[in-house]
Length: 222
Length: 396
Image (cartoon, rainbow over all chains, first blue to last red; front, side, top):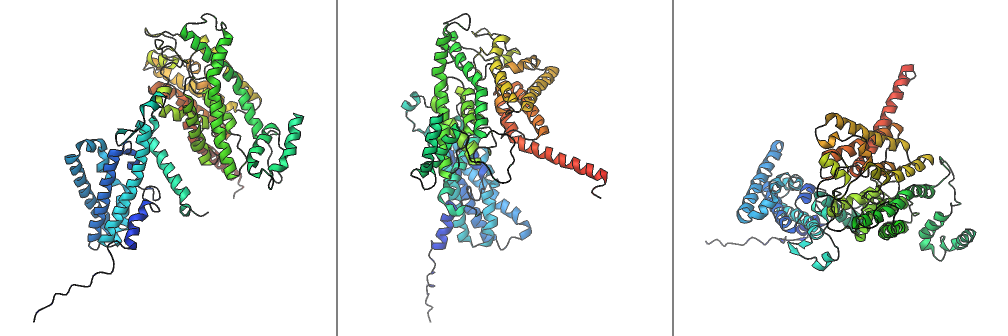
């Protein structure tokens, strides 16, 4: 008698079904962690003077949110509710330290530039927010997607802010000069306001303004 | 005037609802009411405190600024020719050349400020279907008066646009702004283009490169006296020049006499709050006296009254701190607000070398604090009255 290894029937759900796609794309616009949930504002003001460190920051945060969501979701049934915050913090800090060490090893300059803000990812409300709101109650795979989506949503905003700030503040994009010298000779001057964190507040505000004027359904009904 | 009035009445039906040019109603209405007091009156429970409407009020403030503007125009030319070594001697030598030069420098700034500001105002008003707000009539004049004469025009336009959009329209237009609009324009330029605005070097229009000098404020910060000249400096200030206004500076701020004329006009017409002007000045003097008492640095030891003669303190006190929208409203609140602004201004001057002049930031600080001050004044009044009632046993 030989046992026939029967392949279990392929899962009906595809890896990126409608629900999964929504997990990824919702945080980009309609449920953006920065502009709609207003989380992670501090770091989007602090690290966005130039695009390069901002890019690294966006990737780091995405990695931390996605992986911590995944890990916590795996553990979610084993975590006693009363100490869940401490458990979450431990997981997040391990990941943040990992990210920090990787940056120090491979991108020392950028790591220097980002200084404490890599370590401060642990205090980024997006991370804890997603753990509490999603990972504690959902399966690992959707949690991972949710983390990725929110990381991307955060990245889109801070990269846009950094683009505007670097362009207006130092006339560069990713460190390359884009504003021609002729313009400077004609009297154009870089905007110093964009180099200080207060300038980022205005850029974020404009982002929210533009987003809401396109997406009317986000406005609170009066 | 009669002709204009007839024309306006004749054209009005076209701009009313259903008329040919109904979409330009806001624009037409704005101009018509600018020229003539409107015939529409409020019905129902309104409280009339004065017979003049907002446009007339604003116009009075502009009249009060005219002495400062005219003197500023002359002074820009005067400083320019002085730096070039022409027309030396009495300030009156070459008067018309100086006025002409100053007018060429200053008037474009005024035009740009008004065009950009009113442009945005008109656009927003017709988009929202509001009547055009009059508030910008004053801001548009204040902005040029607090800028250095050599400021590039595109910066003026950008700063005006920024201030009108972010300080005013975002909050709901005239009467709703938290911060003084003209100061917001200035503070934008101050942080965005510090090389043009920092104010530690004299502002003289098109001065020769060899001609360098610190402002009276920078002198005072360095040596404790606004008059002293350092070796590499080709300029000296006398107290008389500082009061008359024959010193370099922002266009409208230099002449203390012109400012006081404006202040007198504002107080006499009852438009500007004399209490705020007085309390800002008293606050500055008080802080100066306190610093005299502490006396740790040369600047602290500077005679306290000299603070009034330097920089834009007086201009700010008269024209900007008194802005009825952003200042405190209650009687006691005005005193607290004014003292706070005055003390803060001198404190910033003395303590922070990065900001030679403190009145701009002090007034913005006061603006932010004003609602809080008013709140506590009102609460204190309510508490006091409750106590009085309880004392009489009326609440028993």
